Length: 508
Image (cartoon, rainbow, N blue to C red; front, top):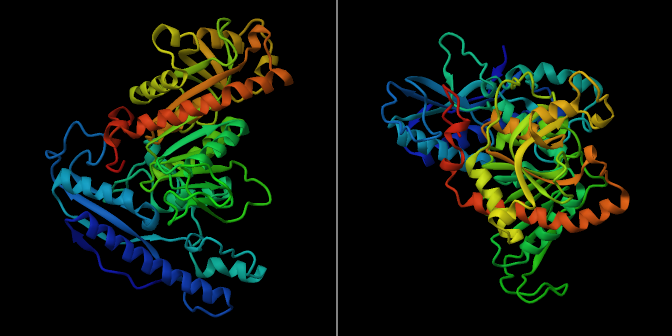
């Protein structure tokens, strides 16, 4: 039997801050002991028995849901019973946990039980930021690792709760959150790998794009905003955790490099990686985590699913897709905007998790913010706004060369897109929206028409260069403005009841 490290006894709390403090104590003790044992093992010591450390848990028991406010989207359990979840990284997720604890206490008037679970912490998830086992262990010692420590177990990391397929065993508590602690830890490690930045830098509002041009403009604007004392942003983070941070003593001071009047001094730390990661992320950071993260997901629905699978564990308030699309209507012009209010899903990457018969509805709060943002940035409104923006269905395909498929007879792509009333086509938007629906993350899509393949207008080099210069800056500013508007919404309104299932988990 594994040797379970000494644990802190379970206790009950009627205060969210005290409950969170207990979670931190349990987690930090278990991680410290596990990391210490690992360090001795790496140094060649015999650590003795098999070592096991476990995650903290939170449990709530209620015999009635009469106290729950029916207007709420989250923060309450669906019916009488026992509910629990394991927790991890309170240093990163403490603000989120505290809010969920406070809502449960308020809505049910019962105590929270905090204790040490029986769910092992995989030893890989105890590693510090720059620890690398592979470089310090011999091949023989790596083989012995499994005999001494718990390794990641994919059976404990599936998305059954989020997918609505999870069934507790007899006597087992109902889930309290969409993600268990091992699933969260797994995604945190994947985020570092795919984006080249630490999970700590991710913000509550996320922009996705499929073109580097948008990232180049975001870097320019982000660096500019950090130097603006009135912007509310305090740092800009790039891959490699290169941080441009407003200097602590720089209020009103000019940058030594010759900043313009009104700018403040900044300090830059970190070093850029020798090559960019697969899906580089950039973060415009606010102290309340309500800043903006932008990720270049590249081309294709597989990347779109991969990155949203992992960002979802951070429970963002919204994510938006800003990218290019093929316009499918003759009346559209290059540079026109498309606001998606429905999706045709031919991406094929979420068919098992979210069947095609599940509708992906538009979310009113996000739709209104995007439309208002287009009006604010372009200074057009009403009937004039319709000249450059059209609302309709966006089709997403996993076949980049769909135009080359036979168009005569049968169910050709052209026929299907026409029957669906689609006005634009890309490869990522439906995936991002569908995963937002699946993970209860508010979503939206605003695309820009870059070609019209059905009407003989394909991108040629000269046309593309001019298009990018004219539209990327404006399109990105619209996305930033939409996030400003969404930030003004109360989280309880933004995370609306439309995204909740019959027997929903209590955590947002």
